[in-house]
Length: 253
Image 1: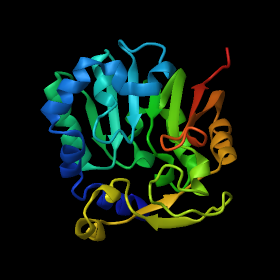
Image 2 (image 1 turned 135 degrees about the vertical axis):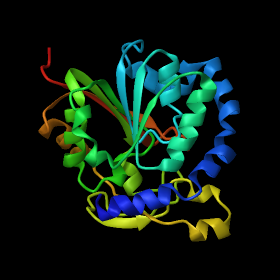
Image 3 (image 1 turned 120 degrees about the horizontal axis):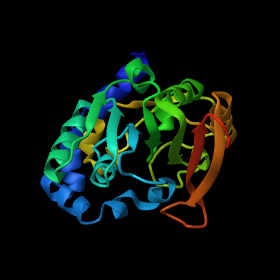
Image 4 (image 1 turned 60 degrees about the horizontal axis):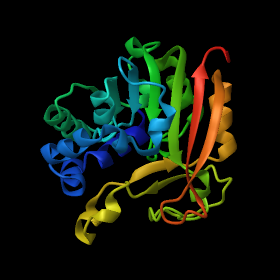
């Protein structure tokens, strides 16, 4: 495991379980809400799935299971790949409370066991994933390897414009849009903690990308690019806050 992955793992295992309980509720409480309307829990991402039942999905950096559990309730066969044991603990309890089964692999995504290669119909990620990886080409190569021929990648993330302005109020530093800097910053949920806890939380190691870096990484590893959609920021619908790129492994037919 790379040094920066070890650093990010340390950050994501610092009180993460307690954070999810505080932020989203006890697993039994959260599971009840998810079961009421799984599609609603997927939010805008539901439009990118053709079907769910029997579909093998790799949920990359699936965190506490907030999207894996709805997908499983809809009939998908879901495997989460994530770096945090704390996240696995919450997601596993959430799955049990919801009455579904998911597979959860704690690992560095760039070191996923090759037994999973050519196994999935869909690889899916959302909510700010790419900036945890310093080599986007290597990341996209793994996504390509995980998919069966004809499989689809659904990659939704923070819009690259968040490099130059804190559009989403994530309290991360602004920089040149074209910066290739690797920098240390607070983990995603640090801003929800009290000052004392926040001061003790390990930092993450980040690398942010431009639109062209993302699109070219998708194309260069062999994907057929299908769509690149931009979504309004949750703070201001006049500004781009997120994007979703979909691409297919194999032929363009």
